[in-house]
Length: 398
Image 1 (tube, rainbow, N blue to C red):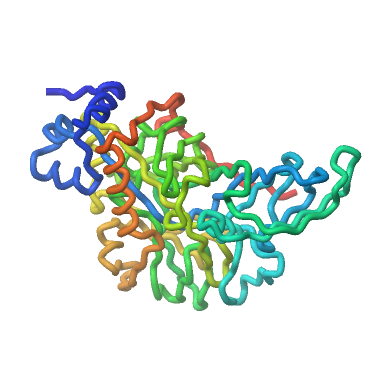
Image 2: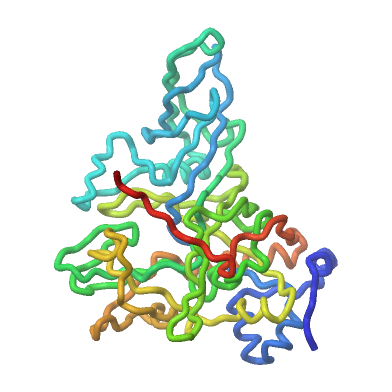
């Protein structure tokens, strides 16, 4: 018997406390026990989760007016520059912006690097943050400088807005050169000394809805410990399906732009992160519910780690020059085993994303839905899917 459900029907069951909600891992077990059709009939919502560094993140902050008023031209938060070309007392702090005194010497590993991601997590933790602002002064905004200490509760509005989060699938990074390299994928040792990856596999939100049948503009999500929404497709959104020798190996490069109220979020799920030799970022927790509207959606939501593959990329030579690596693909089952084989060599693996945290997010979102605290939103606009075909453009030099 075919399964066809609607958002309204599922939300009615959530409201009545009768919805069947499982995590993506639990769905996989249920499909193994009862089969896909039966599981699709029984389950209403599948929850997913990911917790990983997401560099394309940041926050819009509206500080409130000073006395006398000031049109802030330059702003620093704990010494980290924020972009101010928005309005008189509004600024955007980017997760990878570095402290002004940071040497930014990526040729040397250096020590702990403090950046915009740390400012955001300090704000969410309700720690005092030093605000410094300069202005050129006008008749209506005469004040020229300001130095004070603020907390998140002192700010009028604080909005987390991340232009590119929840990468659908990402590279497994290795290094074929004879030198250690320092990247946003961590330290990668020479001669295939290690392999780093950063996707939660069978819990990863966009891997469980590869054709964006349920995830779209307006989808309500778990974001940073609070409620957020999908605002648009993310930057560098190039959705496609990995196909090798006619075999579908999972999805590739979809991304999400997400938004939410920073004041409702938690320092547990927004964590400033520092990489040796690279800089700063923000680790973000995201969980997305997938309504099981039909059997096709259940089929993809039940994909296992052994059915999902990441491309292996040489970050020593192939990645910087944007030439594709030719090192094949590896399943998330193998990646999570702790070792893979590349060019005939056994290579130890390590995740940059946290599976325990991903499980925790999926379980917490499941609990919200079961308690009737979180209902699903139907997208108001579909996101580009692999069927649409996206072309990636690169900068052309004069």
